[in-house]
Length: 269
Length: 314
Image (cartoon, rainbow over all chains, first blue to last red; front, side, top):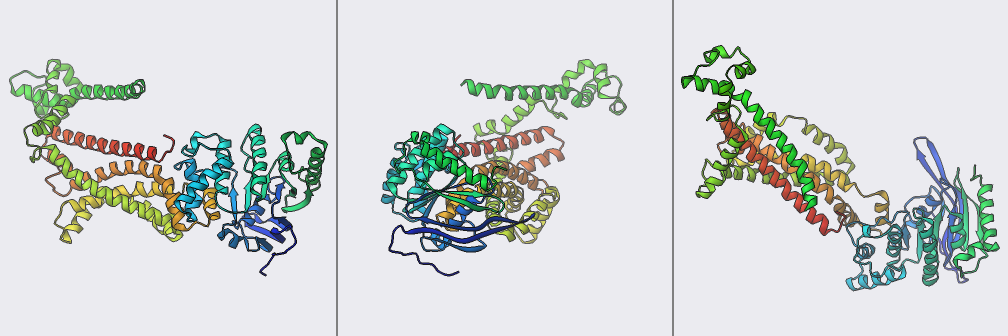
């Protein structure tokens, strides 16, 4: 694999770049083509959503970026490194669909977990826990245990855990998929504020068209068998996005394009 | 308080039923001994003579000699002692002796219980350690998983009664003077298995996503063991420790039976059998049950304390 240097002077800087990416799983029922010739560039500060039906490879692609799966073909670079190097350099924070907080640790203790593993000093851990709890609006919950929090609050805590160390990429795999719509709306709004504040690059997997359109600067539409990208939509929506933006014609127009992209990829069949 | 009452009432009801059945069983169980004794005292029994009565069922004997049924509840050497007799015998060989300052006499069940408890605890420590080490090996090494687990299962299909004398013979061949050691080995043999199985389950309890999360932090194997697998296994560990300590006690008692041991609860049971004193057997049996109950309760309290301290939902 050729080593790639993307230290270009002209902005925007490339953070994640995939070229002809392929991933074939060998299963008992024969090979499954999870990703087929995926080309994508994610720039620094982008909010990119991946949308598509089950089996379209959106989660698999995210896991490839994270170095949790190994592509069987093509080139993938993260911050100019291979995904595995990027993982070892702790280049990203990963948020799973289920918060996965440790029940035997307090909320503060859960956020301290990556910091302990990465060897941050005691004082710095405390400072960072306070800071990220503030970011996700969970001040005062540091000493509570996960079971004392609602599902939405637990997911916020898990986002705080991913923000606690200095990774400038946030990979989110259907983080709000298990939450009800009211909580989801609220968290979407909060996530946008967080993104504006931290200027992180976010890759976000979702099932929900409104969620994808509301959050993203770019929407990647994917379809299954084999998992591939069928459309990449640049969002014309402004950076400032109140919740009622979702009733504007511009918003509905983008949502329509996403739906068209899904239809073109036979995702509705 | 109300909650405690609610859980106590069903337990007491079952206890009451068991005691009632026991009392009812005493009459047919003891009728022959009671009639023999009455006949020697000059009473007229139908039919006459102990040998003749063997051909008659206990129900007929009770019907024909109704006035002597009551004597079955107050025999010196009953075939089945009443709960009250067992209680008295237990008190006589424990509390009463302790009050007289003879708790460590060879006739005291406190002394014998202590001997058994020592071997049980040694066996428990040994078995638990082996179980935990085995579980860690199985979870972290595919080779150990393939090779250890089948043998662990096979080991539990061998009747301990067959194995115990061999362990004792081997250890005396090797010149082990300490009688406690082979007993501890037998009890460890019974105790390690539930701990092994429970710990394997506990160490494998974390979900794939939780292990993936640690991978995204580039955590070392030791870190994921200490921070995830070990704490996740604690509830499983305690559950198997409770099974394990009861098994360890049974192991020690079985280990005391074929040794010709003269001390320990198992030895009391054996001696009671040899000398035809069921009362001694029953009181040793109850002493063992009480000991097991105490040990399990102690572990249960430790579990509540530990899990509560870890902040997990009670």
